[in-house]
Length: 223
Ligand code: URA
Image (cartoon, rainbow, N blue to C red; front, side):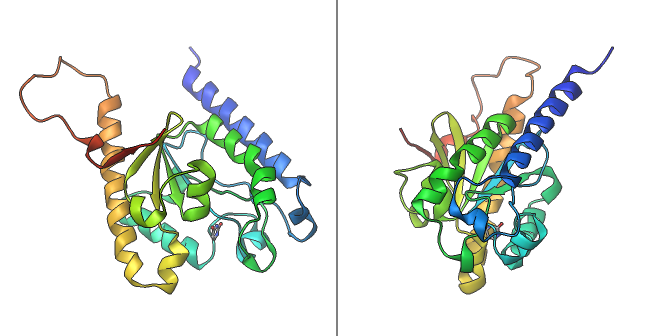
């Protein structure tokens, strides 16, 4: 009998590839005039974790893949530090095209690109969306407090679960942020493990004795 779960993942992968094709030919904002190519994102449709950064930089624009420069190396190191491989997670950005000179995204560019990120999230349905820096936080959780007050905590909004953290590039300029990021990634791992355990079918009804795991202890509920 054919494995239905494989068919569903294949269908979701095909939808992701469709989004990537649309990014490749996108002309919804002026960035298409200056970019080398669109950078839709990489990773499997079955990813439990999705990481969202700001926008492609020079190297990403050249190679067509997100987070392949210095900030990307740190992201890879942080993921490997908690036993995750880049290949297991879906990595993308708020903007799919490089802003010239790596300037901040403009509001009209963020708005023009919004449909692609929304569609990727809809297809992947990740357990947690890691928000790398303030642009990802503002885009997906508008009205959230600043990164410095909510990094490393789970934020629930619009039925999704987010974890904001500092952008890895910030730790390249301010070395003290690297240990903050490492600690936040350690918490992320704990939350993912807990979610995995909660999703497993229970063999027996839980005892009323004993401590319930406290995923919510560090959780912010917004909206
Ligand atoms: N590379 C990316 O792909 N995104 C960023 O936000 C920074 C570097």
